[in-house]
Length: 321
Ligand SMILES: NC(=O)c1ccc[n+]([C@@H]2O[C@H](COP(=O)([O-])OP(=O)(O)OC[C@H]3O[C@@H](n4cnc5c(N)ncnc54)[C@H](O)[C@@H]3O)[C@@H](O)[C@H]2O)c1
Image (cartoon, rainbow, N blue to C red; front, side, top):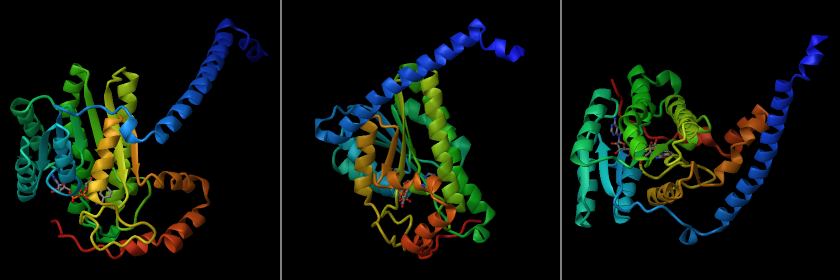
């Protein structure tokens, strides 16, 4: 009986009114957001206002090889002061000499991202020797490519430490200065394998799914606390021709080239985009996994895309102990 009267209390009425008001406002704003998004999709990049990276200090983890090297070269050409972290000293040297040959300033540090203490101490060195990091690109990644029962425990732990846990240490090290200066950008490199579970990737895919959760939660916290000038971008590329997935021959789409991936990532950073999935067509396939029956998804993956079959060709990686 009393339940019915509750609805007429002033607080209930005002809360219903508030919900209705917020919903109407949301619907009106949604029309604007959709039109804005359509407009910017149709406008070519050359006509679009993009943020300048000139003079920015940009730290790239895994900057010695693959996509990291392409990012370093392209960002230096845009006037950024590039800081490279990598475990591979030779790869770092190669990237640094490519940059110095073109006359650019570059800072490089040999660091194992799986080692928390090393990450924190190297971050401290960067702050002293180079300055405040404006953009952090958590790009380094590792894959062992074994089926679940063949994965040894050390490989699983290393994959987690490098692909996701290190993001906590680097972001903790550099985000506070970004917040106090009111300028910053955290770029998280995930993967399409972090949106769709992948054969021989129970560890790799899981860490890449974790990057999605990390990015989305961090973005939510930044916006909820009003840090609107600190940006966050999640990058999820399909296979890239860097050697990480050597031997794999995807059936429907060829591997992406590292040059294209780096260029697309930089455009996305300069537009302050929240998500960057490449190629863009993958975005339209993703909702299918929630909408279609599971048997149909498996058939699409196995019969049409031949995803697991192509991953069976992945070349063996050196074992970890
Ligand atoms: N290659 C692909 O098909 C593909 C697809 C989607 C996403 N990705 C992601 O893109 C990013 C770049 O991949 P890539 O293809 O350029 O890989 P890559 O293997 O060519 O380069 C990765 C770099 O990270 C460095 N690295 C590895 N372990 C490290 C550690 N413990 N400490 C410091 N540095 C370490 C390596 O030395 C290397 O220079 C990764 O996060 C990867 O997971 C790659």
